[in-house]
Length: 226
Image (cartoon, rainbow, N blue to C red; front, side, top):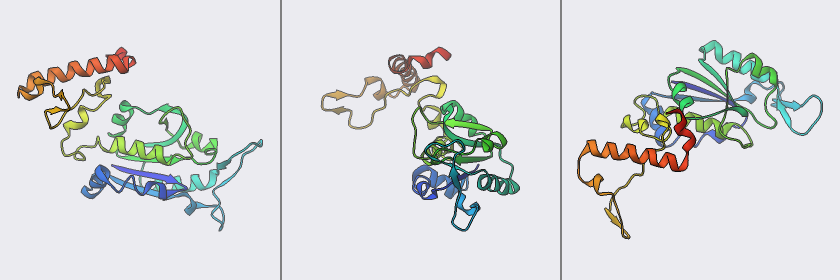
């Protein structure tokens, strides 16, 4: 998979993609992540990529021309399956969307900043608008990192044990069951006996029951689709 990201602050994305699972995915050649500084396509020598909004009001808006030039140039190299704009008014990101995106080959993510991007870029180029929650961030970079991490770990070969992703929370609309490791007795709290008996079939049945119970307690809204 190839993921391209357009941003005005590429430094914010250096750490998330250079550690842990995503770092290993890149080293294996399974996932390619390229971060592009929008100022490369600035409209003048001062690196300008934003301007005041028409109609007045606080906050700057990312200009059409730099974004259009950036997208056009990148599209000459490859056709993007999705051009995503991360924005508070987009569709809320969830595991279903992550699963769908993990099947794509080429994705472009546009990170807004300041007051956002000119609406005409959304109309002309964007195929999917995504929000990571009902709150506002300083820019789209952290949201983009969340999307890349959630999608990247689903790509075959990224995780050492590919079945791990299948048992994560929100797969099959259930929260993950509780997990335990050594010691078997910690401050009087013991690991459930069924996990110590070695009967894999019974363990899986217990985990499913626990997942349903957890979901009923914490997120009953998820069960309406089961």
